[in-house]
Length: 112
Length: 113
Image (cartoon, rainbow over the protein chains, first blue to last red):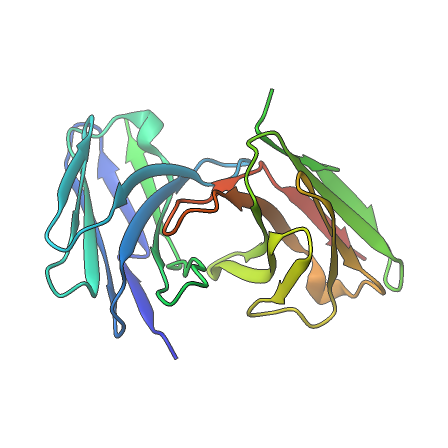
């Protein structure tokens, strides 16, 4: 079956620092999605990547779809307290069923 | 108003009770999903539906059932709740077209005593 590894599991950083997290898989995917979940809320889509090698930014967030199609990373620059939350990678399976596979999440804590 | 609405937001009940969680959406999406979230395990797919007449089991469907009453409504039932079904439950929707992101409700926190 598919194995999806998201790392790190948690990060404790100071406000203003940059953050990097990544997901790797044994399987090839057509699409990589990155979500953020705030406490008490559902995941919210941050960035969607549709092509191998694609590099996409959304404000201070940058994500890349690995050229092997088996990995992706998310960077956050100049972190602020509201970046606190859990970040999930979620690649889409191929073959028409299009079910999301979720990483176990990276819990980010930002100290002011 | 939220595009994907889940009710109730919180529920505490006893072992053996039948429980229904409801989800409605105003996004006009054909596809709807139910997930369960446990600490440290991410989100796991319980059931999904690609249209009103289509129901599919996900990764962890045992102990759950679903009903797609209309394009906009997808409910999840626990016929006889057990404590290890205590979790956060999310409904999500996505468009018909391939590789479209899913959009999530705010979740139902379910506690079974």
